[in-house]
Structure formats: C-alpha cells, structure tokens
Image 1: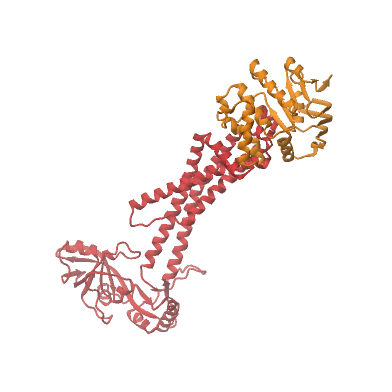
Image 2: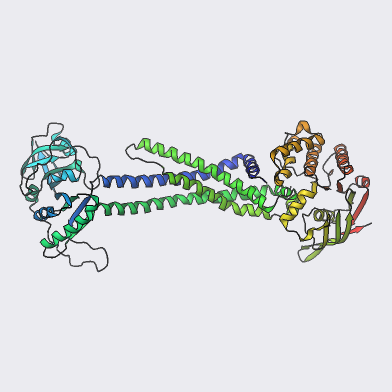
Length: 401
Length: 220
C-alpha cells in the first residue's frame, strides 16, 4: 500500500464523519492554542523584565552595606551591626581603575510642599553621576551639578508626577520647593520614565547626597551604584571594591555586592521556570485532547468493525490496518494543531492590540513544539485503537453488520 | 487446487466443545463449479472461512496450489488471500463512504498497484459487470443487484483463481439473483474456480458438483 493511498483513504474516512472530526479538531486546537498562548505570555514577560533590567544601566554594580549570606550556617539571631557605608567610602572607590562612575544613594521619605500644596514622597540623595549610571533623561532644566559630593547645595530635580501634583501645570523651574523644613530650588525636571524596575522616578525628588544626609540626619548611605568601565572590567571592579572597603573597614568585608549580571540571570531562571510551569499546566489540556482522540478512534474502530473485517479479507496486513488508523489520528491532530496555532496567533494579536506597550509574540520554537507535540499525542493515543482494529478476528468482524 | 486433509475445527462454547468441522477431506480442482449446501449450523460457513484462510483449522492440513497454508502467519495469509481468493458476501460488504469504482479499487490499493493501472482495471471491471454509468454512485444509491455486481467486480479485480460466494443471492429478489448467478457462472467458464454456499436447492443443482454438509461432516 502506498503512503499517498494510506493518507487519502484516512482522509476519506475523516470526511465521512464531519461532526466528529470537527469536535476532535476543536478539542485539539484549544489545547494547542492555550499552550502556545501561555508560552508566548511567559516568554514575552521574561523578555520584558530582562529588558527592563538591562535598561537600568550598563555594567551596573550595586553595593549594599552589611553582609548577607544565604549559604549554610544558622540564621543570625543577634543582629550583626554592619558598619555604615559612608560618603568617604564611596569616594575612596574612585581609586579603582575599573570603575567609570559612582553614584552614592541615600533615600528617605519626607513631605514636600510649594504654594500650600503638600505631599509625602521619596527623597533621593545622589550626585551628578546618577544620571549617567541610570540613564536618566531630562524634560527641562538640568540635573544635579558636578561638585564635591559633601557639599549640601539646596537644589533639587523633580519627577514628572511630583511636578504635576505640586506645581499643577505652572512653571516649576527656578521655584522653591520645601522639603521638611528646608528650601530647595528646582533646577530640573526628569522626563517621564514610565515604570522602571526598582524606583519610580516619576514620583521622586532628587537632591545632592549631602543635602539628603542633613535632611535625614544620617551619615550612612542606602547603597552605592557603580558603573564599571566595561563588561570584563566588572569582575575586576568587584574585587577592587571588596579590597578597598575591607581596608577602610578594619579588615571586615561587611558589604554585599550585586552585579547586574547576577540579577538578570536569576530573574531569567525564575521566569523560565515560570514559563515552563504554566506551559505544562496548559499541557494538561493537550493530554485531555489526546484522550479524546483515543476515544473517537475507538468509536471509529467499533463502528467500522465490518469494514475492517472486509479489508482483512481483501488482503490488508496488520501493519496496513494500523497505519490506516494512525494516519487518521495523525491527520486529526495535525489539523487541530494548525487551527490551534492560528487561534493562538489570533489571541496574541488581540492581546497586542489591547496592550500595545507589552510586546508579545509566539516564539518560533513553540510553533514547532506545538506541531510535534500534537502529532506525538495523536500517534500515542492512536496506537491503542489501531492495534485493536488490527487484532479483530476477520470472521467475527465480517459477521457484524 | 484446494486440498483439505482431515480438517477439524472445534469451538469452545462454555465447557462444551462444538465440532463445527469433523474430519473433512476434500479436493477441489482448478476451474470447478461447486455448491456447498446444508442446514444452518451444519458447518458450511466454517468450511468456507477455512478455505478462505480467514479461520485456522484446529488440526489437519490445507494445501492451496500445493503450498501448505496452515503454517503461514496472518500477514502472509492476507497476501495469499489477496492474490488467490475473491469474496462475494450475502450482505455485499461494500464500504458505504466509497463510490462503486472506489470499492472495486480497494484490493489494488492494498496491493500497492499504481494509480494509473488501477484506473484502467477499474474501468474494465465496471464495464464487465455492466455498471459503467453508475461507477460514481455510492452503495446507498445502488440497488441490491447492482451492489452485488460491484462486489463481484471487486472480488475479481485481482484476478484470483478462486471465487468464494456465501449466499450471494440470499439478499436479492429472484430476478437479480439469477443475473448474479449467471455472472458468476460466466466467470467460472473463464476458468475461475467457483464455490457457492447456498440454502437454495435449485441454485445448488446448477453446480457441476454438490457437497452436502451435515453436523460438520460431508454427506455424499
């Protein structure tokens, strides 16, 4: 028996049961559509978040005060008191040849007011280097001026939301803004950043780090953001930072260093696992569709008992009977897969239209995987009915009408 | 040539053994025209199934054209069946979704014959049974006599040496019944061995040799 004949005979058998074929194709396509759609969502979420992290800055190193160990040992019952990370620590880091820029960060919350309007917001103390490290863009005015980091200049830069809420559409540049009981002159407004991981720069007031230290009456820094000169320099920079801080902190290595790499890769791992999880949940619907295919094929075998007996009498071998029924199952599943991919693609397009800012697409490997998985399901669940057909006793099969 | 030697076929029904065929020895030469008659339950269908290689004898030897076919496995039997034996059934056994021509084509599809040759042979076969203008009709659009003629065309399309007909007129009116019998007899005159199972005494009498089966034994 020729392969093309097997296929056309199987197709003829499918066509003679249009309703049943439609239902089974529908079931399979829903399974495939949900798998591809969820894969697309997971993959796109992963790409989105990775992109967000990469947009934080390039070759970014974050230094936190205190040391947190997550491997081994008992949890510290008596809280270790870490040495503060101070402004002079930050300045000392500039010794390293592998570091391009340093932005010490001090953060706190305080009421800000102008012309009788007041709200509570985050105050971020830093230096002019922050703009470079975090790739900030200005809507108007200028960023913090370059100067000695221990000078407490009374100037501030506003986020878009703060500008809108406090100055209500009026000119903010050059105006006075009161933070706690001190006055700062507005010298710039940040361009709207949208939602950026970590800090919402729209709802923030940036002041020189020394001013923030006086505002919150503290010597210690929240963290230090460092830009390394290049990607390979990052690892050298980490060693340098450890060495410098150790020397300044009486031999104690009491800081935690996070590289952008490690954040990105751990998020990558988490999100990949998440994608796999939701995809395998959707895979359950595929398994259900597979059982349905098996059910339909079993009914098909039962209904065509006399036809199978006849084919047997006409000289069909067991292998031929099996391949006829497998071809039928495979065709149903393949049709379901193609319809499912179209459905998945359509839903992706609908989602894309609803959320244009979230770029979503079905990864090419998911297309291929969907086809392979549906075919495998079809063949796997088709084997049992096909073998049943081949095992029928021709005499009994022929006596059925 | 069909040679059956001491063929026995037992069925186990509950804890009873039913002897459907009891020590049958029979030789049928090529080109013979034989009728097999007997009351229902006498074992004539079992005999046909054994000759047709659809059923295995419990014991005994079956030589088909001097080849011992009792030793062959199912797939080899299917091939022997395809090339040597044509079937005509009481209930036609046409595949309902296929047209008359496609039903006739089926044994050649299973044999892997190419499309072009299949089409030519189907055309000839359809003409031979006088259905050229109804070749594209499906079985439910054909009369009983026409269905049986399609079945005969299908049974002969592989040019088998043996034609087995199980009550070929049992489901037809007497007029189309006679037509079908005459068609089968014409094929027999062309050299095909024809074995007909029937209840009908007048039909059985037309054959050159009559075999009566009673209680699984040949009664002469």
